[in-house]
Amino acid sequence: MRSEVTIDLGAVRRNVRRLLAALEGAELWAVVKADAYGHGAAEVARVALDEGASTLCVVTAGEGVALRAVVPDARILVMGPCFGDDLDRVRSAGLELAVAQPPFPADVPLHLKVDTGMGRYGLLELPDPPANAVGLMSHFATADVDPAFAALQLQRFHAAASVLPQLQAHVANSAAALRLPGARCSAARCGVALYGLSPFGVDPVDDGLEPVLSWRSELAQVKLLAEGESTGYGRRFVAAQPTWIGLVPVGYADGFRRDLTGTEVLVDGERRRVVGTVSMDSFAVELPGRLPKGAPVTIVGDGVLVEEHARVARTINYEVTTGIRSAPERSRRVFVDG
Ligand SMILES: *Cc1c(COP(=O)(O)O)cnc(C)c1O
Image (cartoon, helix red, strand yellow):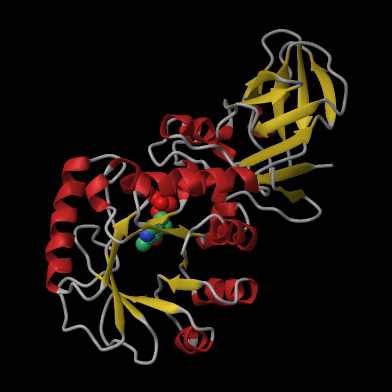
């Protein structure tokens, strides 16, 4: 087996319950865009709804249409924007749509998206709401890193919401749902926390969350590098003394990024350093001695956090899991519901 990604739907269930408890009565809307951040949109959507999430949020019309086939009755919000015949697809699949600029389409429930400081999609001025508007939303730029700016955005959002009290107000993402009680409003749109990933880049346990994804492989070859010999492109790791290395059949084509050199994975339960340049189809780990071919490798899981890899790659956990590519012949994805 090259590698296997395991998605623990039981952990999704527990994260949903944790978020519902934090929301103190506000609705939980499960954000399952980008194939649920690499975790599998259909499967995650099903268990999230099962545990009490009330709406699914996606970005594209295509994502919404695909989910509609899986959950015939759920409320699904397409956060947009629309291209081509997307609007027709949104209408015929019975989806709702976020709109960030006029003209406002008819015959589809609309969520007016206001820009309170994100400076991305969003209306800069509050319009007269069309008859088919049902929601009012905004999005935080700094709920994870700058509470003062988030508070300013929240103040602007509450001002808008007070002008349009007939619309359902929703502004919180995971970070705000967990740590900005004033942002809970009527509903919170949570993504990353559902997956047991920390919106703050720390250990998810700090916020009562449980990682959902694990990624395992095995050593495909073990060899001894003599002093002065190297492994991988560019000879970026040269053995200072005779060094055993193991080759793991996972590379950047699978989503193990090229900038993960230096991160740690478990080999036979012990932390080992990734050395040399990550290839398209493999990476190398430094071993303490000769280990058997087939020794188990845990890339994520069993205490190895996505957050650690993200720090090494100077990115965020969101980007690491969204980048994992599960293809049947490369990295199989299996679901357990424990
Ligand atoms: C992705 C997204 C969310 C979810 O954010 P998390 O940080 O993953 O909870 C919420 N709202 C909008 C508009 C988004 O694009």
